Image (cartoon, rainbow, N blue to C red; front, side, top):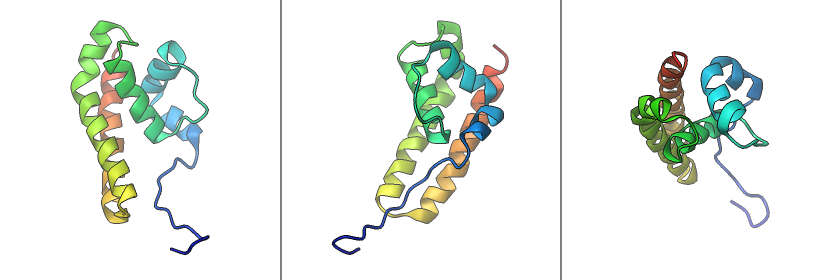
Length: 114
C-alpha cells in the first residue's frame, strides 16, 4: 500500500433492488413498516437492520421473538464479515457472505409467515 494509493477489501451490494426482490418480507418489516429511511439498502444494511429491529423492539414482540435466534446469528456473521474484510481476509469474507445470505433466507422464511 502506497502513501497515496490505498488498498481496501470491501463488500457491497451491486443492485439494491435485488435485495428487495430476494427478501421482500424482511425489507418491508425493516424499512417500510418500522425502520428509519436509509440511503443504502444493501445486503449488509438489511442484515444490520433486521438485527437492530429485533434488538431495539422496533417490530411487534411476537415477530421479534420469532426472528430473534436467527437475527442474533446473523449479527455474529455480519460482525465476522466486517472483521475479515478489515483484516484483508478476502477468502474468509467470501465464505461469510454465503453464510450471511443463508441466514437472511432463513429469516425471510420466518418473516414471510407474519
